[in-house]
Length: 284
Image (cartoon, rainbow, N blue to C red; front, side, top):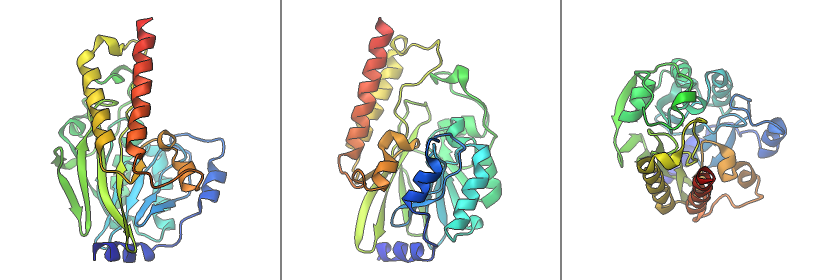
């Protein structure tokens, strides 16, 4: 029944630009604010973001959910993409996020103003988004740009369900790339075919030049635990804040499988290899 409701919701939207148009517009571009046409991923799930940053819209009959907002400069394109799909910006009722760095959260304040939606976030993300306090243990703290502050309407805990009509998402705290990292999972249906989708937060070990992961073994252990957690999530379709991290363009174009039950594990395994290389490089 839920699948039928969600499919009906998607059928009210105009067809998104096909992946060929998106590939053409983004050829040679992967900037955080480079405009891209919207594209349907599966069922009621769309990417309304930019060439370099994923912004997800999950459409429903009682309002829509948007996860992440790219940069403030990208918001006009994001709002235009909502309209291109045949939806009204004011029908976006809920904003969620992956982590509080400017390439994913920089547009939250402007998108909230454009839609009137409420933002829900973890307690750690709230410190950054609402209060402007970057975590002291963020490996990128010394190079982070501030984001426009946004009031958080509700604090989320690990494993908490977030619902909007028939849309039901589960929050997974996944600190590592950022101390406030959060991943999301949910079921979406196209007709009678339903898939578990995971929006897995970034897992890369990125830092300021002065930061050495080898000097912070507890933080490395936390990142490894997050990587293992993402690897173990039930996962038919993995999506990522940076589309290139999970080959989203190639998968949407049919060059690689969109549905892959090993997708989350493959994404996590790649993160482990990069972390191991970073630690080995630091030891030289």
